[in-house]
Length: 340
Image 1 (spheres, rainbow, N blue to C red):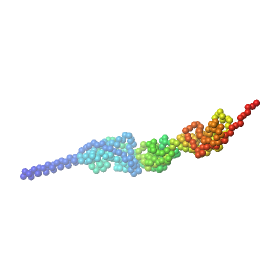
Image 2: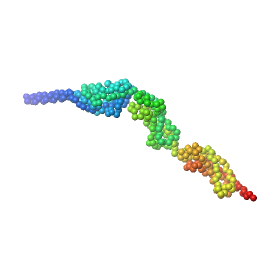
Image 3: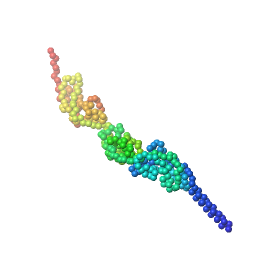
Image 4: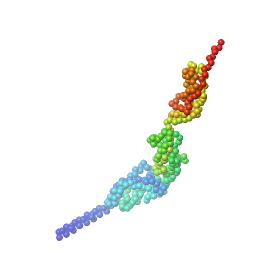
């Protein structure tokens, strides 16, 4: 009898506890939560949506909610996940233009609130002013900015044009000549061999400067390959005709007649710093093939001698030719008789 009474008492206690727990779980309570509310960076249905005052919008909404303890516990557990708003969602705009969102109404329609039977008493801020814009596309050319790199000819980029997507209101800022940009850093050019065409792979393509820093701007493809040639620090050029000059000692030179054959050397190869070679090509530097004869050479009547090259003004350029030998005819002049 005592055992049966004890069992009955235990069962009654358990039932009471279960009823109390159920009643506790279903009792209505209020709670304040801070939610992370973001606007989707991706277009939906061809529309993008963002707050008009981006600096004032902090992606935080304080809400006061009411509901059962169980519902509030589930809501609070899920509140760590951001809520993302996009065009066309219940309570949100589906057409371009400016509007004011009632955050209490927008949040109330979300599944995490509606399906749990949670009521939203108020929000802070209560509203947010937003702008919806239609996404448009346009094809623009790609240009390359190699900074201070000294290129031998223009760089080529593949693909030569990209597809640019942006909100219609900002796309109107673009001029007809707007271009996308591939900006090459000095680091990306490290290791390229001067004088040889090289390709920088997968360089980032930037939108036109008019759209720099604007949200919802999409560049497709976002990367491109750039082929370019870094100008060699040394280069070569061919000088078609270089005149031959005779150099003799001033003291004995007037006593001799010297003729050289040929009087011009053809196809002289010049090499050295690229900037000096360019000056040579433009005629800003002159080059001469000089036959230097000493007094002994003149007395011996040498019939050939190698030339040396000199430039005006003097430079560090070096010159060579297949045959640097000049044939010479050396004759002593008859002495001049003094006038009576």
